[in-house]
Length: 315
Length: 271
Image 1 (cartoon, one colour):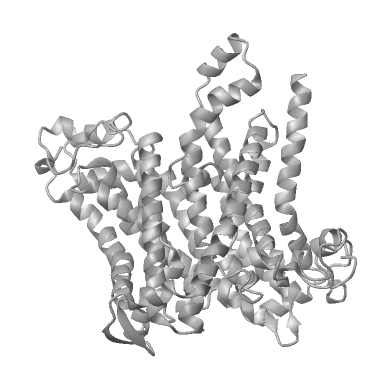
Image 2 (tube, rainbow over the protein chains, first blue to last red):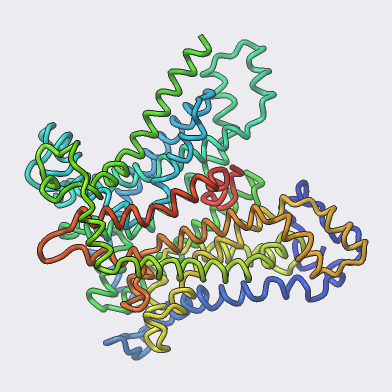
């Protein structure tokens, strides 16, 4: 192992280190590994690191009409933090995540436990459940515009009007309900994925502890609380965190279904960034927002990496 | 007792799947629903199918959007397979300086919100003339797809037993030959699964195509607003486009099933 790599080879069990038989540390490989990663890493630097640094640069300058002006220090960040619309959008994003993600998590876990009861027809049920998750956001938007269309939408007519929730107009156009409609769409799209991910986790649990529990006369509920939950915990953390990240950055579905409206009723942080750039052409504060979001995501990504690696041994 | 329990849970699971797929079936029915019944109250469940919406969509040239979508998704995936495969393999097999930092960079790139990235892309592209070009779009798709591919294929590479490679080395194969003739064939299922997912992500992508593209590279997702006309929204036609965009996804889902979970959880869950 090279002295600079702090010898945290994450998967010593699945990956016997190949240099063992070759007798030499890194020198045994020379430039070969670096030649293999160079094209991909260079490309990622060009398409991710450079744009990121450019955004940081923009956020620290005064920008008028897409022309980069004087050094502005943290002025753009101050403008951003003083903008009530930014805080409003952060609140919308948080509300959206706070309702949608726990729902998807709970329903997904319940669904996975159902699937895990030796359910038949799984070779049909599983691919069908994948369809909403893999669909293009544009298709999701078309689908739900149709289901939730005012007066003639299937769901509007049969459920929303019947229960007197709203009549005459689409829930997507209602300032008080539009966000919940978006939550519904998100839950529809992502619960099946959570379900199948949890199910895959349940399927990979070791059987021995369950046999022992059965011998000891443990009930199903006890086995679930004492075995399934602790064994699944790291996996649930990883999947939940990943969903949290995705739910926070959701843009297309909201953009296409409500455009952030009516008014700013569904303007999540992603939509706020989009509008400050492409509607108001306010590049300074927009870049500042992008940087703030980026730093947040880096923290998320790091959290995901650490949990997946330390607790799950996945990487 | 046991079998009635299985039957009960099977019914529950089937009902759940039916609920998930129902809106898709409803949209599929809209593709052949006559215009006159489109806005019926209560919504019409039975009708004589018509092909008017399909004809309109074909006449409007949506087939070209389909071709452009195939080009962008196909070419970007091809590029990613070519440059991403060696990288994923190297990360799994060789000691690389600051490997953990590099991998975290790859992951962070994948998780970064596109709405924050599209700003610098737009400004840089406007300056260098890459707006509304295939090259521009394909490059932009590398951010989420190359990082995804390297990361997930890396997880497949770690599952390969190193003994075969060691044996080939002992037989005097060069490292390049080991990679091409030993590793690649073994890795094929992983490469196929991961690249099909990349293709789907590119195929589905909206924001970059919408902001960085234009008439010349108008992919299927961004062609959709053309159906929202001054005479109103063409729902039947929208449904046709929606189903067209869905077909490759359906095909992929049935082929890939097991690997989708692994891909979507970034390799954390082995499906």
